[in-house]
Image 1 (tube, rainbow, N blue to C red):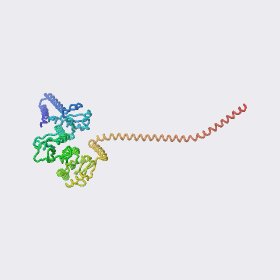
Image 2: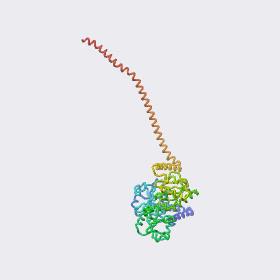
Image 3: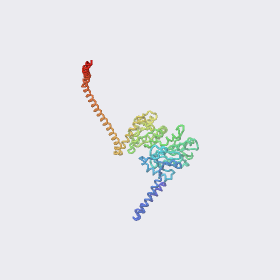
Image 4: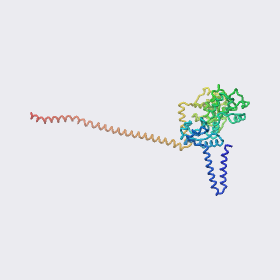
Amino acid sequence: MQRNHSACSDRRKILLVFISCLMFPFGAMAKVKATLVCAGLFLCSTVLAIVEELDDTFKDTRVDDVWLVDFYAPWCGYCKKLEPVWYDVGAELKSSGSPVRVGKMDGTAYSGMSSEFGVRGYPTIKLLKGDLAYNYKGPRTKDDIVEFANRVAGPAVRALPSKQMFDHMMKRHDVLFVYFGGESPLKEKYIDMAAELIVYTYFFSASEDVLPESVTLPELPSVVVFKDGAYFTYDEYVDGGLSSWVNKERFQSYLQIDGFTLYELGETGKLVAIAVIDEKDPTEESGRLKTLIQRVAKEYREHFNRDFQFGHMDGNDYINSLIMGEVSVPSIIILNTSNEQYFLPSEPVETLEQLVHFINSVLDGSAQAQGGDGMFQRVKRVAFDAKSTIMSVFRSSPVLGCFLFGLPLGVISLMCYGICTAESDDGQEDMELMKRDDEEEEDDEEDEPRQAPGELEGPEEDGENEEEEEQEKNPDDKKAD
């Protein structure tokens, strides 16, 4: 209520002015209109000041403040959709007194800055604190972004000075990480880990006096996670690295899964066992499978928690697009998001023992894996994504789909037609030239026999002429003799 008090006060003032417009005589209407215009301009300038438009000078001026920045592209549809939410985020942080300053930067106009901050797509949301840059990967809603900004902007590890504060945090968080003890090498590791993983969850520290009587620790110092109505202690020899353990434990053992949550679960390295159900049309079979998954997550935690995450998903649309197939509803499927493999039970799962056997078969490698990230699957993925894109475009806007895909096909068809007709014309010209050559050759063959006798008679005629010339010369020669 306090963070919205200033905004509410401004709205009340404008509402009172508007009501006064209706009550005042028309002679005073001009003054009231002028007041409304001024109030509107004031509010617009206030809203614009909440989110600052950044340029290349931001690199030098950002060091002393904590910034939440939206890197966008003017042509990006998702960026335009985020814009009103982004102004709400700025207003919320401003009214709550948060030290976080909110800005936006055109990544296409300042590509050098975008590259320096590691921006590879739009929109990209980053919180910049000192020399560190934290990527936001959560849902693009006002509450989620504001919660992320407040969490990351604060200290990596927050202190819990009293039992009352500890109980308050236990009620507020579904998963709570707490370090108990004094200064130690484990605490240093805990602080370093918290600075890395604070983008996902909160981290706290407390003394042993803060613990409830029901909680007993094997030793101090210790790192403990509270979730699912229980608590679990980190064991370096069994659980490995602290960051890896926290990354796997930052989710409840059982939760509702959507596309975004499934993406985050993939970063834990766990297999995901999902009951695919239809919450809009629940059936007895759906409830039974959901209950079986919940029981395995709770009763077999010691066996499967290290390797499996459990949950349910409403509908099979996302699963179908992920495996490029059809999953019946309700059903059970196990996904390996690291290599895009999936496992389906060979027979219907009706009891808890059957479900446990199926999970064990996946764990020991005896279950048949489907899908994967091989070359054939990659080619299939490209074709599937192309088909899905085309179908979604035609479903959303048939006219636009016809224009986008019909125009290129028409141009290609015209080009092919032109090439084919050009080849046929060249063929006809070649045929005509060949016919002409044949006709000329035939004419040459007919002329050759007629010229041959002439060529043979030519020498004989020359010989006769020479003899006549000699005979004509002989009388003179004789006279001379």
